[in-house]
Every structure is written in C-alpha cells, then in structure tokens.
Image 1: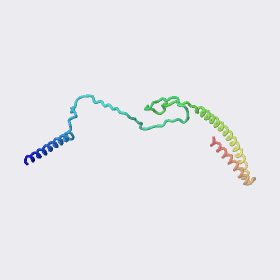
Image 2: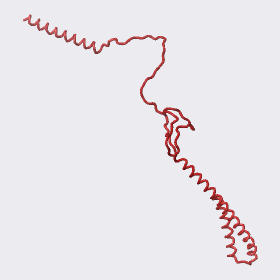
Image 3: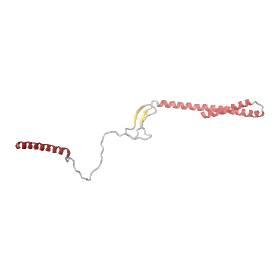
Image 4: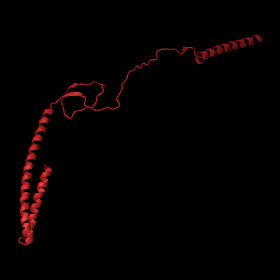
Amino acid sequence: MTYLKNFIYKKYLIYLAIIGIIGFSFYYKVYIPKHTFKTINASIGDMTVKVNGVGNIGAKEIYEIGSIYGGKVLSFNINEGDFIQKGDLVAKIDSIDLSHKILEQEANIEKLQSDIKALNIDKQGALALYHYHEGIFKKNEVLFKKGVIPEHNFIKLKTDRDVAKFSVSSLSLKI
C-alpha cells in the first residue's frame, strides 16, 4: 500500500511540476518583455525634420470670384494656391453682352444730356415768367396800397408770382 501511495504521490508531483513549468513559461512570455529595443546615446548629427503626408491644405479665408456681366472664360491667369492681391488679373472673359451694355449706357448718357438741355430751356422760360409776374406784382402793389385795385386781384397777382418762383426752384432741383 505504501507503494501505491508513493506512486500516486509521485504522479501528483509530476503533474504539479508540469503545471508549474507551463505557468512559468506563460508568465515569462506574457509579463516579462524581451529586449527588442536598442539603447542609443546622444551624439552629434543632422537633426533635419521632414514631414511627409497626404491631405489638403485649406485657406484661412475663401473668396468667391464672379463677374457682373456674363461671358465665355477665355483664360485663367492664376493657378490653385496662388496668392493674389486686389487689382490682379484673374481671368479673361469674352464680353459678349458687355458691348451692348456699353452702347445702352452711352445712349442713356446722351438722353440725360438732352434732358438737362431741355430743363435748362424750361428754367429760362420759367425765370422769364417769374420776372414778368414780379414786375406786374410791384406795379399793382403800389395801386393796391392806394386802394385802386381790389384785394382779391392783388392776392391773385401775388400767388401767380409765387407759383412762378416755385417753378424756377423746382426746375433748378431737377437739373
């Protein structure tokens, strides 16, 4: 019986030793790091930094470029990423409608100049009419003070003079 106990005892001891060896191996592989790094000491050398990468660089501010008039784009004078300043030529546009717009504006200018001439003539006529009513008013004012003409005739003459004066002012403002 002691032989059987010794055999079982040895058998458990062997199992315990095998479990211990497996546990130690596992611990050694997982928890004890291998020395896979290299120790470097400070030395004199080149410390240039190079940055390589893939991506996009954006602008701080983005401006839309447009034209007041339509037309076909003939050429672009800048490339993406170029720095531009106020007054730089960005693109050449074929001015399909621009010549028509210029002719239209020139016609408007001619019309306005002829309107100004007509208003000046009207102003001269209104000024002559004002001087006429002013002269009649001054003559009749003396007669009104002497009691020769009635008051309602004098008020009508004063109103005619004032209307002529307002007409001159109105035409001056239009010019």
